[in-house]
Image (cartoon, rainbow, N blue to C red; front, side, top):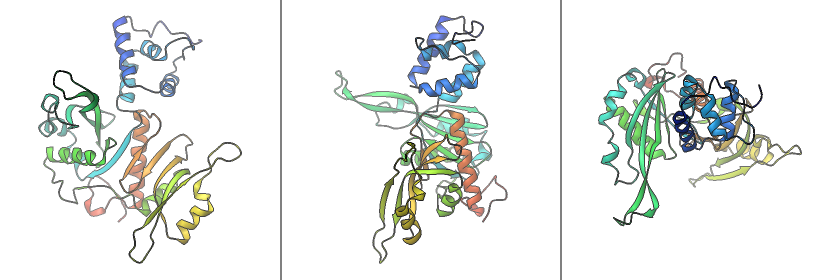
Length: 333
């Protein structure tokens, strides 16, 4: 087959196609991500004169589009903030009914700046998604009230709880907001989030970095923190990679100055943009905030792969204190 559309998979309802197309456009999904999904599902790519988003809406059957929704509803250029809620996996089935009481509804916060409200919970692939929306102030003013107009963002923040681990991540750029959300989720099932053995951010310490380095192909940019000694504040130096003769960015870990800072000056990498060994993943690691974020659009499956990678690195580097942990086995002290 060429780039045409299989009539067997085209939905018969024009209304269905229109709704699907609008859903795709509302999420501003990158064309590369759409094409990758089509290839992975053995679907033909459209010719250049055919609208890609409408093509996707047409050629996927009902089950395929349901999978498409799961992959792209919460995907994107996401920030993942990691927390450990000791025992939260044991409460997995109780959270949907209990979390309702902890968050307001949309109509209760529509005049409040950025206050998250509960939209829904959704479960798939052994993960529970606590979906939170916010009203975000716009630059325009409501002529009837004189107040800034607010735009409703129904999927603004998402907390992802894994059925098999106590590692939770919240997708939002705002770390304090992510912390507040996790505390509310813990409170909803009666967990004492003020107890540091129950609620804490996992440590992306030097042991974490050493273990994580085995998964990294190269650092494209990084920040090195060097202690100045004598009680003075540590300084941070940022390095950016140069391209070699082939146009590829060089690995900053092979840079002489970086090596001197790390080895002779006892410096530590605090932040860095890295490419992983698979040659495809690229992410920005923020050690002090136990956070990662992506510059490119990532679908759900790939975000979950990274969650699994972080979980694995924490296990092997001792990032889960043994006395605090539930639901894990053979974790080093």
